[in-house]
Image 1 (cartoon, rainbow, N blue to C red):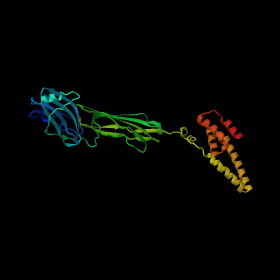
Image 2 (cartoon, one colour):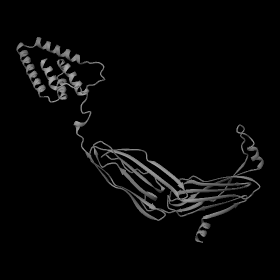
Image 3 (spheres, rainbow, N blue to C red):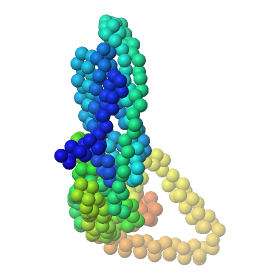
Length: 373
């Protein structure tokens, strides 16, 4: 009995000469962002005419709506339409839902003329459109608890692939939020100087039905850093308008530990000789070196020149000692390249073939060849 009285209070049945219409809201005092159902029924009373109906709520920033059902009974000169809309108020206080109904009148002759043409001779239906004035529906929208992020019944889950990784190696985090209700735009993980954040655009799905909207949103992140870092705890405050209870959805704090990367294991610790050089200009350096030695020999006193030769001999001895002490091919290659001496050009090529192309030539063999020269 109480349900019947409530239905009468929330419904309105109006006759407008040739049609009747009724509108029913299942709740006139919802919370903001709570789903309510609007049922609309439009029936032709004057059976002497041919009628068409078009009905919809008017757009407004104060609410959103989605049509979830439409049924038509098109008997001879007796048209009936049933609409069902899902409406979400977007603000508190009084919210006016404006409705738009258009009835179109025509007759049998005009209908017969319109359908007489084939697909190459389409004929328009001549009709008269009449806007039916309808009183708006008024909602008294309640405010949910302060600092509420979500209205509805939701669950929150996540998958973190690892808590221990290497420096600069990304971890992957997937977060899912789903349930009954509208999910607003939310950014779960914020940017931070402690790590690099790479995020895909959130994937959102919504399904509207008589029970409201079922929503599902997923976030995918890749996060990397050079040192240990912490992803802070995330708390979403939610409110269930059906039970009128608040609850929290929590994404716990995550501590990510990073292993240091040994620089010796990195592939690009040293620059290889550039392979893209088209012209080798190193010969210019040798020409200037020879000219400098020639000018020095001509201009400088002989005793000073002798001291210079002695120093060169001493440098040669130091170089021989360095070469003898080398323990691997790469170390020897670095020493010879630093000398910038054409005498070691052949040895450098051999060492490069060993270091970069994995050829098998012993270190002692290369040292002997250098010593012989």
